Image (cartoon, rainbow, N blue to C red; front, side, top):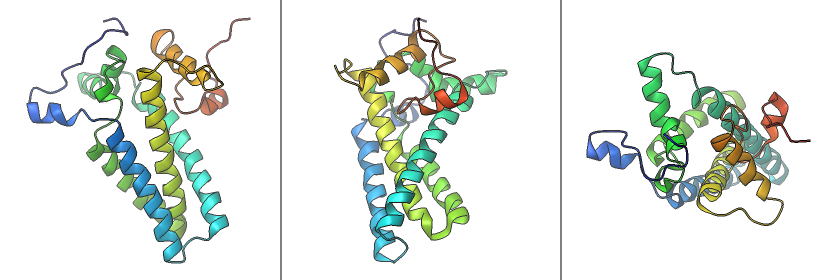
Length: 202
């Protein structure tokens, strides 16, 4: 199937499950920005954060998310389909997006899945970072919301005529030229660190 094929894949025969796989991009973005703000507010109100720690932890969480984004895209969403189970999971989570990259309703995971993963990360980070979790997870969820916005924009709109155009080019290379490079969507940082930046023409 050509990667620029228009339309939408059918992932489930059950119409209810099929409907759950589709979401308007504004819903998850709004949810995770609201939770991010709520975490910062809660941290301030209960004395877990001050201004400097909130700023530092927020950016640390944002950086952590960018690494999670890269690793998940490279090693989970593009895992080798060595058996039918992996093939099925990989296609439902990401393969269908490569077949139908212009399907705007599937440019984000369903909010219920994202909320489950976010809750798991919150409690995991809580064990590691204690009260600082409110700043770190706020930054992490903001990073996720930004990722969703960028991912939607590069698929739904023409590239801008400014420095942000590089994000459109970077992700287009991943979709249409080399799916084994350019895994970063919101930032090419970790592609540069781990050697998966697309080769530039001399």
